[in-house]
Image 1 (spheres, rainbow, N blue to C red):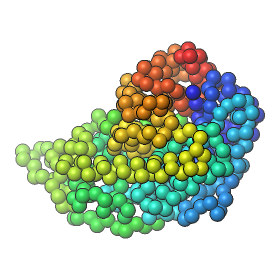
Image 2 (image 1 turned 90 degrees about the vertical axis):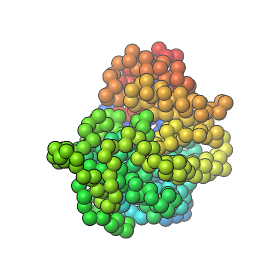
Image 3 (image 1 turned 180 degrees about the vertical axis):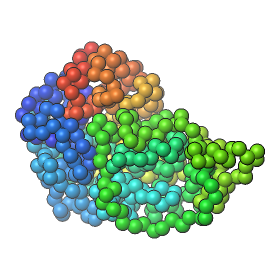
Image 4 (image 1 turned 45 degrees about the vertical axis):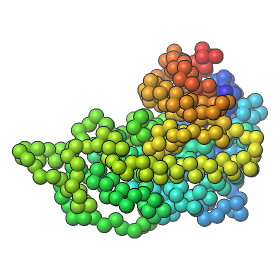
Length: 453
């Protein structure tokens, strides 16, 4: 089965959309039922060309009695039942409709509930990232799945961000690349130390993480992390067209795969320019971090090297966050709609954080495991092969294929990538994104799928 991803506003108000999607040669459409904020091109819609989506929303009618503390927001830029309208239009032309469900990535709920968001080792909040260590977050995700299956009645359920989000994120005018943080730094900055997470780690974890991040900074007084505070609504996230989801590197770091303001260059110098003067001293004294500990003289190459003997315990805590959420959601889904297939956006790397949650031991309760394929095809194929090795008999492996820039609008190139992914174990292709892609790109998708078939 091949799946094309779209938003509800790509379909609602555009009578030509269902036939256009059916003409791609896919069997199913992944239709967003809950989605984060974005700014999207709508190149085919008769009423607009650019749509601003200022906050995350739920695209089915909200029944107040079905929610507890956390209640999703309704959209104002499309009808509140946009998912249902789009679903019916797509099914009318013979397409299956799978509910594309974004879980812990929600800047609206994170902004108004700052006590429930991911916080790094310095206490900095990530308002776009709900932390699944909190029971309120787990319950919200359960209600989300239950409502989508009950009200939306999809042909399939796709779970994205089924675990904690991390540092990598396309935010409002992102300005983080100049810090020259490495992939290991990004992994460290993705570890959550909110009130529900901090005590789960070994006692020295927070200081060790802060020391590793601050290795090149001069001595400063010991910093005190303040308690959780309200987060300004100005931090509500938006994304760049074509970069709404992040891919995960082989180091487990979540970084944008398309050009954004947030790209971290792992090849850049690990020491900022202002620290270069210290190298003129024959034997410079050790640098001190804000925690008062001695910083390492060279940056760690991996998160394991930074954590040292704490690695196994910290990794187990991180993986358990995603495992607990995933197991609860699969149980809810099976109880609510036993025959609806479940697809997981997953990454075999245990340090992964973001849209593709860590799945280092597999998940027999899911029907399809989908790996991100937005980067170097060889690296993507390795990730797919690892997921294949973790799969159970009869479980399908999907490749989440980018058909947007920086990939060319070239059917031959795309078909070659599909062959590479198929050799690595992919049995279906999830194509991102049929609503954003130009006519040339849609033609390339159609021809590439025809060649592969």
